[in-house]
Amino acid sequence: MCRTVSIGFDPWQADLNTAILAKDASGSYAADTIVISICRQAGKTYDVGALLFADCIINPGTLAVWTAHHFTVTRESFMALKVMAELPQMRAHIDPDAITTGAGNEAIPFRNGSRILFKARESGAVRGVAKVRRLVLDEAQILSERAMADLAPTMNQATNPQVILMGTPPKPSDDAEVFKRLRAEALAGDSEGVLYVEFSADRGARWDDEAQRRKANPSYPLRTGPKAVARLKKLLTGPGDFDREAFGIWDDVSGPGVLINQDVWDALAVPSDQAPVDGTVAFGVKFSADGERVSCAVALRPDEGPIHVVSLGVSSLSDGVAPLVDWLATRWRRAAQIVVDGKAGAGDLANALVAAGVSRRRVHVVTTDEAITAHAGMLRAVVEATVTHLGQPGLDAQVRVAGKRKIGVYGGWGWEAVVPGGDVTALDAVTLARHAAETAKRRPRSGSSSGKVVVL
Image 1 (spheres, helix red, strand yellow):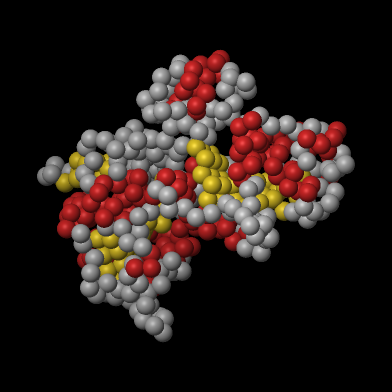
Image 2 (image 1 turned 90 degrees about the vertical axis):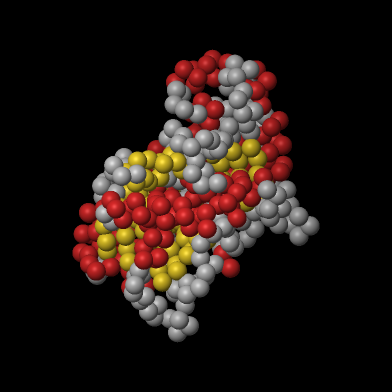
């Protein structure tokens, strides 16, 4: 179909599409989830965009949605595919005058009733869209579990749907829970119905090694030439930036100074169906020291056994705290306490929660001594196996870079990342939540007939 409208593919793109579109004996896609980790400017937008065009032409009434975290990236992808849509050979399938270019409403309609919509995830614009046959999640390195929970239901009513996640290896500060989880499961052989494709050079590869350039970027040197690589080397000067962006190499998060043994932490993970569901609940909220991020976590102390902690992800403070306030305001009655820490916003959040109807007695801004106690208690709980978790990739990644920073003058300490650009905000939040659940005296009623506490 693409050949008929003058869209061609390089060999690697054709091979990738063969794998993406492979079907099983029942006629369904062999992989309903596609995950692609690849360096920038390799041609993934062109390739996946062409795939959407062919699908929309072949299958009338198809709805495809292209999303990125940021509006600017979404708009950029739309403009690139708009050029493809306006090719003379496309006139039989697309009326160029019908293409919608208004900011936030970008869409490419087809004469047969198919559509490609372009939406930014940061604005929540995908909510409410239904029967999406193919969902493209660009910038997959900035995709939280919470965002995925909003996106996945859009495909529930579609016939033979498929989701495509694509992005570059995440920075330590990126909220890449979904991307990391899917990669970890694929590399461990635990995936089902997932196609995982990763293009990357070898760790420690020299930037001027021709063989490594070809290995990292399948478009090299035909589409991306040596000068482009040299320019990236000159411009990407942050720790690990060139390896991630140009060579597709994922960070190695192991290193000296880490306090929590990785094997010990991993052994504390329990499947979600084995996690406790009844007990004393507490929420922990941590603002990062630089004022850029906030994380929320929940801890549950059962009558017997270890305290269970769950990270609810890390959010950018550029989005404000209103969603967090709303979320906690509908759940505070189930919690013994909501503890908040971080000079960047703890006091303001506490006031906002009270203004939203949360009892002032349930909201507590921790003192320095309490923060010190919480961190020492968390490390003790890990060593003594009195805490459990779900094995969330985002939280696991932070544990593996968590070292010690000094607090006060009497030997107190808190978490601090031992790698440049690393983040421990989620680990701080679960640390606070665990401490609050451990020390809480009250146990609010859940309000459910079963007596079980449903938190999320």
